[in-house]
Amino acid sequence: MPDSVLVHSPATLSNLGCGFDVFGLALTAPYDTVRLTRSATPGVRIQHLDPYNLPTDPLQNVAGVALLALLKEVPEAVGFEVEIMKGIMPGSGVGSSAASAAGAVVAANALLGSRFSRMQLVDFAMEGEAVASGARHADNIAPAIFGGFTVVRALQPSIDIVALAAPPLWVAVVHPQIEVKTSDSRKVLPTQVPLGLAVRQWANVAGLVAGFLTADYELIGRSLDDYIVEPARLPLIPGLAEARVRALAAGAIGGGISGSGPSIFMLNRTEETARAVGAALGSVFAELGIAFNVYVGPVGTQGAYVVEEI
Amino acid sequence: MPDSVLVHSPATLSNLGCGFDVFGLALTAPYDTVRLTRSATPGVRIQHLDPYNLPTDPLQNVAGVALLALLKEVPEAVGFEVEIMKGIMPGSGVGSSAASAAGAVVAANALLGSRFSRMQLVDFAMEGEAVASGARHADNIAPAIFGGFTVVRALQPSIDIVALAAPPLWVAVVHPQIEVKTSDSRKVLPTQVPLGLAVRQWANVAGLVAGFLTADYELIGRSLDDYIVEPARLPLIPGLAEARVRALAAGAIGGGISGSGPSIFMLNRTEETARAVGAALGSVFAELGIAFNVYVGPVGTQGAYVVEEI
View 1 (cartoon, rainbow over the protein chains, first blue to last red):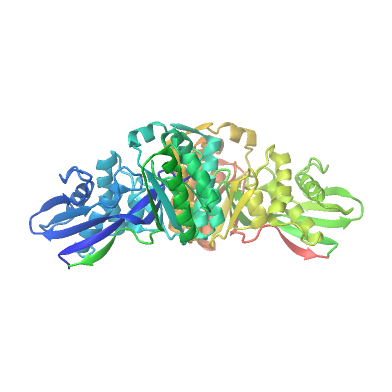
View 2 (cartoon, chains in turn green, blue):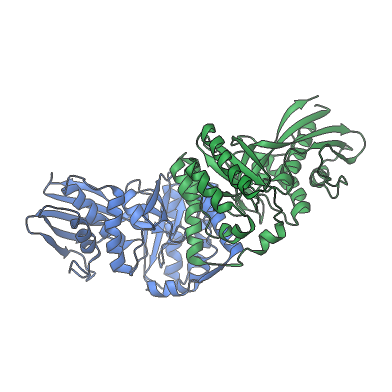
């Protein structure tokens, strides 16, 4: 078994239009880099090599909490030295905390002879998510561990994740650097939904799963629309409506808010289209005078993965 | 082109657990038999060869209304003599009116050189459904025309039906002969749904589509549960809870109310299990002293189809 492993852990899209709290999609970029080194000293020690001033106390760090949850299931005396270099900006809405937590447990599993299943790794990493957001949720963790397109079918009585292959797709993401507090983005959600609207939403959910599994891009495009969550969050993200208009004009299949925002994603058939769509997304925020980053890359067929073992 | 065609048009399950107003599944039995004969006299003349006293005035008969909608798109002077022998009892909740409407338009299309697409046939047949239920809906029409497993993704701005193959499955249906008025079964539905429950429902919707498309029977079983509509309708169908318990004990994958009831369906891996499940379903209503019919058959890979051309 290696003594030290280096893992790349990708950003992820959650919700994916109509599938609030259920769908996830793995990206390839940006990603966090996590190095874990085995130590004879039990416990977890964390260093951040990035400029984000995240807590390094393992009990307050998403990767630390995830690793401590994993270590509870390890009988032997072992600890980890952890170095994290975040490539994903915290608060961007593309699964930043999930990437660090997932990367850490994938690295730990490689150091421990791959004794845990992916479903167990999701369980550990969710403990990290709970620290970041106050709630155990798996919609970013699932694609960060399994890759591809994921459905969190249930959290109770036990976690049930359906991991599906995605057809070839290129994703363009714009991260406008405005702060959308998760608490605000939760607060605007309706507590009750008209039955007729819920039916339209789950009709799209059905269409989106069918579209992914049959590689029907037109169907994916028709099915992405979110009738419930995006309308409520629209006022929190200036430029969203215009960004969609320009992205579709540039050839995007469709898209929406990534997670609880502020990032916006668009799915595309080809790299060329995705680059044009990325530029179109960026142009909206350039005109608004809001700083932004654009990421373009294919859907990730794997989640967090080991790139180096020593 | 033939002068006369005979069509078998199968019963169908709508809703299919979690997919209220969206999912449909074609059966193979029971079915309606529809004979159409071309006539030089424009218009539609209907005879019913069954004991159900259904209206034979084309403007009040589901097959008649569907055929008149189709004839509006036919420029030449042509009419139809129609004989319908219903094998599906009206009001049973397995798409009785949809079967007659679908069978009629499939037969007419065969007499007219198959000039209409299946999607157009759905559109015509929905006019018949509107007469029967007061609303244009396609959840039974879609499987009756396309066969297999269908998703009515949208009715507006235009009908969007996703027709998918179902894995090999055997269906057991019990029709307890109690009257459940469609108006009553609509009246008990909640007008608003808590967001959290809607999310659980669309997580199951996603799981069910994935289960069908990957032939994952365990996933189908876990995903069928309906958190919103079945709980509201449970009081309308005595024996439902007990029927589910006995069916699962007999080996069923899962099931629920068919359409708005009173029929109950259960999905099964094999014919042998389906027959045992059918007997288990029947035993509940035998003990309750309620007359019932049980149907067992494979999922229908085609909808209404021509069995004879003259």
